[in-house]
Amino acid sequence: MVGGVADEMKCFQEFIEMRTGGELQFINITNEVKRIVDRSGVKRGLVNVFAPHATGVIIINEDEKNLREDIKSVLDELVSKTKSYKHPFNAHSHLRSILLGFSHSIPVVNGKLSLGTWQEILWVEVDPPPRRRKIIVTVLGE
Image 1 (cartoon, rainbow, N blue to C red):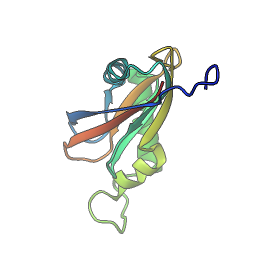
Image 2: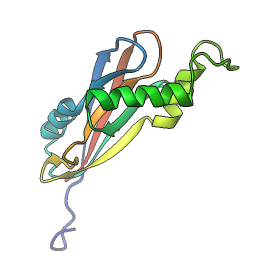
Image 3: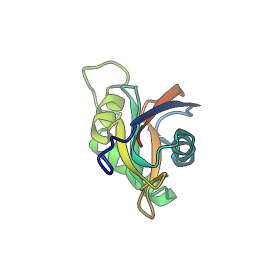
């Protein structure tokens, strides 16, 4: 409330759709999310970026080639795709998605995403075959 009057809460939602190239591909979606926040008209609130996939990952980090290679290396060490798992075919993909997560909420301040200097929003494909993917972006606020 500002000055004793309840501000109107907005809810704006759009989708980002893409085709991925396969396992451990990184796709920077920051600009698409920024455009959605701009279209929402929300000046202060939150944006939630959600991957409705069991093997889809959303991370916030620096989008730098060597760091992406380091992330791939760590994932290979932690969850090897050559290890035998009980789940058929892509158990390693499911396990990697559990480690990295599928959703992030970011503050919106003065109509802009409040990301740190080097932070970017990245989709990480953890499943081996190329896929059609949809990300749900929801902006809530005033």
